[in-house]
Image (cartoon, rainbow, N blue to C red; front, top):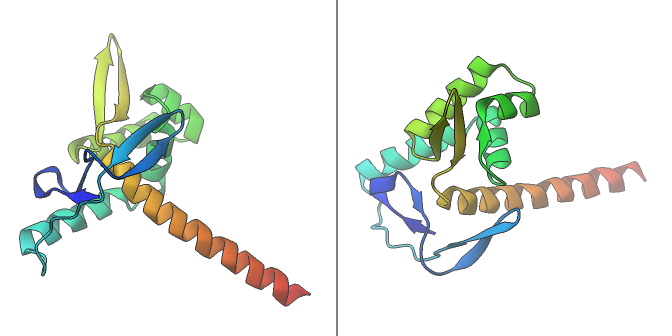
Length: 144
């Protein structure tokens, strides 16, 4: 994944591995051109990105938006939350540049604006899914 200080942390690149988006695939670059040690400005941008992503409701919203754009009403009904709560979380994702908004009449439709977030999510989700599976195996073996 290419790191871009101008776009917070992750930005999609021209080549690399594929990131599954339901029926759509996005190609993400594995090129990392980052100065080490990381400059303080970049560290702050990275921390800001992780703080935005570090909320279960926002993760649910991003997971739903990976398939298609959706209105606040659709997202509210799907995750079983209030319109105010969903709007608040979408506003934070919008401000961070992770989602985009399109207005049509009285409705606002949200979609993923930065595909690089999927590479990050796939890395984290894949790693955690493996850890969870290993934990379940250990627990099951202990019950025998």
